[in-house]
Structures are given as C-alpha cells and as structure tokens.
Length: 311
Image (cartoon, rainbow, N blue to C red; front, side):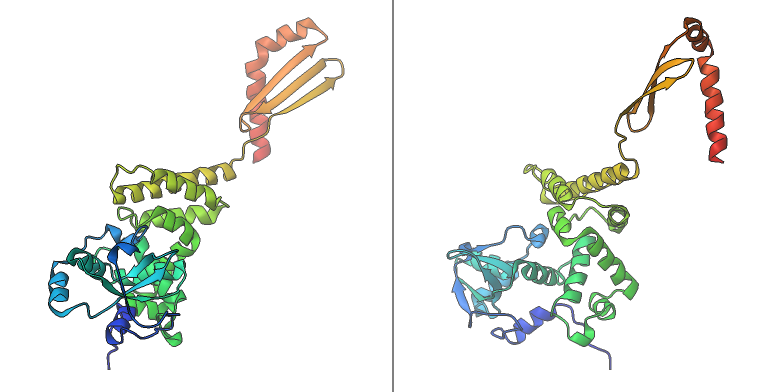
C-alpha cells in the first residue's frame, strides 16, 4: 500500500487534535489573544503573498476552528510560529485569534515556520534546504523515518537531492543563512559556490553576518532585493577571505648585508611578496656605473636561474 504523503505533518496534527500537546511544552488549552499582541517580524515567509479573503469568509461563517501556534515574549506579547493566514484573517475581522501557546525556543520556532511554508508555493532554494534540516533534526518525523530517505519522501526529492540541501546548510551555517534571509533570487549553483568557498578555508562567521546585515540595512529596497543583496555581500566577503588565506600579505622585511670587497646592501621586500628593493652602497664607484648599465641583463639572468631551480 502506498504511503500517504507527509507534507504539512505538524499542521495535520493540529487540525486533527487542535489541543494536543504534539510533544511540545504547552501552557494548556487554547487562548484568545488580540492579533496586535502577536509579532510576525523576521519571518522568512513574510515575503509570500497572503491570501486571506476566503479564509475570512469561512471564519466569519463558522468561527476559527483551527488555532494558530505562538510562543510567549516579554510582557503580554507573543511571537507567531505558524498560522499567519488565520492571524491576518482575524485581524481583518477585528476579532481575537484562538492560539495555542508553546514554550519552544526560537530555533524550533523557526523550524516550525518553515514547515508551515511547505504548504505554500515558490520556496527559495535555501528555504527548502532549511526545511530539510528541520525535518532531519527535529521531532516532526518518527525516529525510524528521520533519515535522508525519510526527508526525501516528505519533500518529494531524491536522497542525493536531500544530501545536497543538507550539505549547504551545514557548510554555510544556519546563523549566516538567517542573516541572509530567503534570497529568492539566488538559486542552487550560487549557494553551492558559497559552500565550496566556506569549506576551503576558515572564515569569520561574525564578519559574514555583519556583511549580510549591512547589505540588508537599505530599508528603501524590497525585502527580496535586500535578501539577495545580503547573499551577494556574504559571497564577496567569503571570497575575499579565501583569497587572503591563499595569498597572505607578506610582512615587509629589511636586511642589511655586508659583502666583502663590494660594500653593504640593504634589501627590502613587501607588497604581498611582489616587491624587492635593493639599495647598494658600493666601495667602488665604477662598479656602480657598470651595474647600472647591466642591471636589466643581470635581472633576466637571475630570473632564468630561478626558473631552472623550480623545474
């Protein structure tokens, strides 16, 4: 017998038993909360267009049968985990929203938000990758199903495709990903490039997050554009760090040599190893005149000797 698809598993649980604990620490029962007391900032699904007209008509006719899920903040405030459309419908109707209050931490709340997004269209590549990580690491699947194969069945992907998603999340890191955001204009190839850069050398994650935050600081741009810009800023910072690691800046050095019968020579190197400065104080002025005329030939000969030594 074919297995039933598991898309939206946590939501199905809520629909079938709205007051069930679902393995979370709940405050008990369903509360009625003013919509204005529920915050929705910093949610990756904010970029998705909400269609609430049909839901408003249903709630107005039959009431809100399925609660939303929130977690408490300081004071009389809450943070939405999922149920954004129901929240907006109740807000538009001017009524309180029925909600289950859970004590889950911010990371788990993010994962639940992403699981809700599975029922929406047009998830970006990195959103889908975070969903795969949430399914594998969270408690949304049974232990026997919590594997790349189980996640692949939920997301309708191959196991190799799931591995690809997970490798990007693990290499880039959820902290950097969340600083960037959904980045809907950035597809798999560029996320793969960023993964390769970050796995090739040590890069300061704090610097990457700083670059993302600076790129997103332009409030005049659309959220999608700010998120795409944040990715590009992180990618540029990572490539610059990788280039510096591959070609470290050479600290300028000074050497003073005493050459018997010739005089003294001061040698200075710098400019990332590409600069060599020789200052000669010769005992014989005629030697300096001769050296000046033959310098190009001598440098070319030395270069040839160096090339032979490299063979």
